[in-house]
Image (cartoon, rainbow, N blue to C red):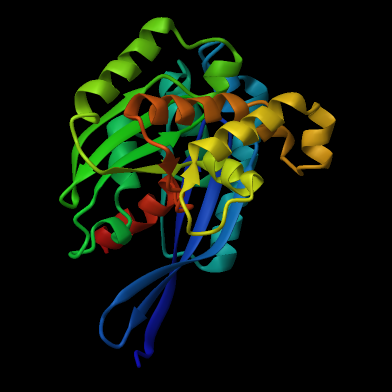
Length: 298
């Protein structure tokens, strides 16, 4: 049996459009020089940067203050955990903000944390970093779909590598503000038809907080694919419920209540266009991919 040679900690900060997350992972090195990553702590802060970025084109002063407070808190938590390495990435909301450079400079001066803004293709690449998809015995073809507050990333993954990927300005926060153009939906549909429908036996992998919450609300068995039937019935139930019932009975976070249904429709759209009946939800995301990126650089 393997024995543990060393344990250290890495961290990933995902500055998204609907929330900001800090993932702290245990990096376990065995006597056989095998490296294993396990989750130690996850903190989610509901700062909806996308509400500013997609409506007024910049991060408001109020949310700049909240963001800086969150980053200072994250830095303190990382210090307490004795985190050795970290990555901090900003996605769709910061990409679209006219004051993004000054926001990043403020974060650095106040918290000491370096933030890098990444594009949709980089997001897609990070999502596929998980070793379960790159195992030498894995010959499956995957379509990854990561629905965020501001964008949706689609990635075709075959023979353990990314074949094609594309980012679309379709997300939960954009949809609730009616900011997704018909042309964008058409581009989304055309990309699916041209790049995914020509492949046989594609397994769709759903990523992000909304699909994980839909999976949980549906009562789906852990490890089993989530059927389109269960997605439809869960979204139908949510549509009939009041805000209070969603928060009190379903225990949804208040910042999740209004985005979960529009986000769910994006998953429905993909499955319908691909003529598929289910989606796999492995409970991984961008922050997990960031941890594996740190491992590759170590």
